[in-house]
Length: 430
Image 1 (cartoon, rainbow, N blue to C red):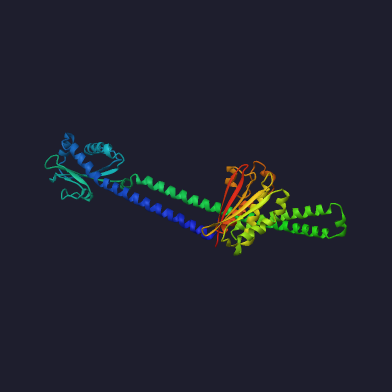
Image 2 (tube, rainbow, N blue to C red; image 1 turned 120 degrees about the horizontal axis):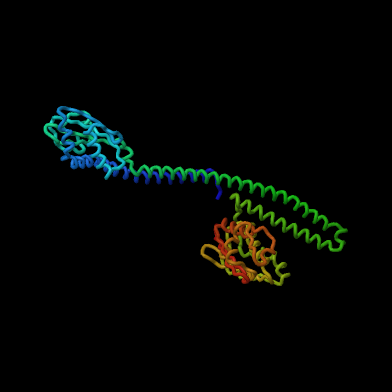
């Protein structure tokens, strides 16, 4: 895939959208959690005060302590304080006992008021008419002990860790969500950074290949030109074995030129800048023209090429040069990877919206492992006699990419010692 600013922008949008969805889901979960905790909190203080009332209504110590007050007196203590006043000590011990059973993490503050005004009622979640003490009236929850008439003990209780209690376990979820988002963002940054490095390396590799092949082409051309010039000299023509040496030079020059062209073609394919010159061509004519170039080599090996061209509609829209290269690579492989005489069969059949081309040989074949990687760049099987055939492992990779550029497909079936069969589907119009 070609990485550019549009691809990176799309990746960034996908990641942000994913994070947005994650945040919405987390918010819904947290909102529900917070509502439940708030409801629990709203019921907690009235429940605690009610339990305290039940435990202390007939407490003689508390009764005696309230009895000694003849007027009006207010007091205050919290969960962290250590009061010395006996009345506050009794109340705090009672509260701590009740809270420790159900709300061990609750932090509270108590405002109290001892009055000779008669009250004697439990108040939950609303403000009472009595008593008139300001601090008690400001609290959302308070209660009244009718310990001894006319003296009345009123206390109110409020949270001092309200926010923490409301969040409850949601705080850990928030922390986990934040950590997850940070990890995702770091991973995204690392991925983009890695992609950028890979793109830079890919560009360097492409530039290196282009420069390298360009440097190869110049001496190849010079060698070819010198070989032709030598062949035209009268003295060389009369020299013993001159033709054999010149033919060897020409053949090796052509082979080197072919390998350089393959590297250039693969570099062009990898860059994604390949432009196909498509036109209507006859597949049967292309097959016969390419196969004709192998007739002499195959005849020398006492082999044969058999044609079963049965497709009625073999006129396809394709790039003639690249399609001929595909046919050349497949036929060349079929004749090279044959221990004995190469017997090659080329078949065409009509298929829905296209032509099915089959190239079959009876050569050395390949095992299942080799078949998995045979279309990968630079892959060469390391078993059997395959290593005796020279090459870069680019031919079948090039074939597959060109077929895909034509919106076709290619498949392989092979067995060791029984040959290989390549099936290619080419659409009539691509």
